[in-house]
Image (cartoon, rainbow, N blue to C red; front, top):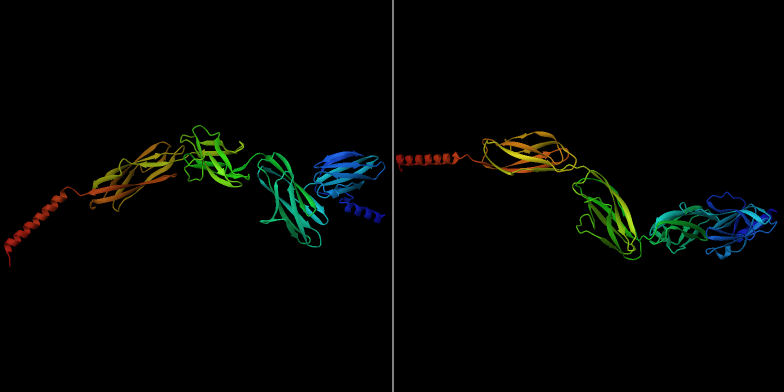
Length: 471
């Protein structure tokens, strides 16, 4: 009896169906379970099953058909009650029990893994979502449980004609050598189309004759471009230059022209697309060669009178097919403080020891934020005296101006010349500085005093010459 069972099991294996006596295998998802009668047809997944049940028989005649079913698996198979029939990489049919011409069966398909003849092939992520035009990578684990090394042939195809290939490391491969009792992981690469309809699409991979199915769920169709922003939400101060880095990838095998626009901008705001942050020429559209990409900059210019708060708007890239790819952006504006320093004069004249005033106007040119702890530091040549009034002010509100008066006195013995006074206005938020030129002039009696001394010298020489004569 034992020999007969082994012979029967061997016969099933030769027919291409692996029969096992227990259900409970991991890695399968049920497609159908229930009663079937003699002559019933069932459509399960991508396959058709016809069931033949002879009254009083202890096994079910199962015929598998479908466009991707190899010819050697399309012949009738016989699965006894309590046994599983395996169609490698495609289906598992379990016959629970048979009553007359009715059998209770369960049909399941591999959920990302299959095992054949000592080799296990699996994928941890057999179903992935993608946009039309994306490249999707499926990691395929090949476990060689055999006692000898083996080189496996790799092949793949897509029902709708997507380009598929295998990569190992950074190389494209079509064969992979796996040492005995060791694993290797190859990546099944799938290049989807930009105009692929929304929905799930199947890709089939073969490792030798082991079939593995993976699935790509296209969530957005008819996009010929992949659009992304490096940062979609920014915080800036009012008055800052605000830019967003934009990346557009043409996923089609032809050159495309993409129109650029911005929707939802608040009133009086301005936006423009630039080739780079230093460019000045505005762009309304961009030309991108086949299967290439382009980096652009979106510059946002709010009005100076804008209020503090968060603002939302949308960058729009329109494809040649008229499909608008939209990316939502956020800008949060915070208050800013700006300082400007002015004086009515930058040059002054004075005399040695004579004091004079330099008037400095400090304005807060920012929005919303006050300048705090504002004071002046002045630097002059050694011996000069400088006093500021007021010496310090606690704050200058946005749009307001504070007047500082610097009283400057040069030394009394200073030489007449041009001198420089440096003034720094400091605050907790900003700092500015200005230079002032000071010309120190000689007193008006000095020339006369010099002339008098010269006359006395000349008269003295004349008297001496007259008295002593020529010797």
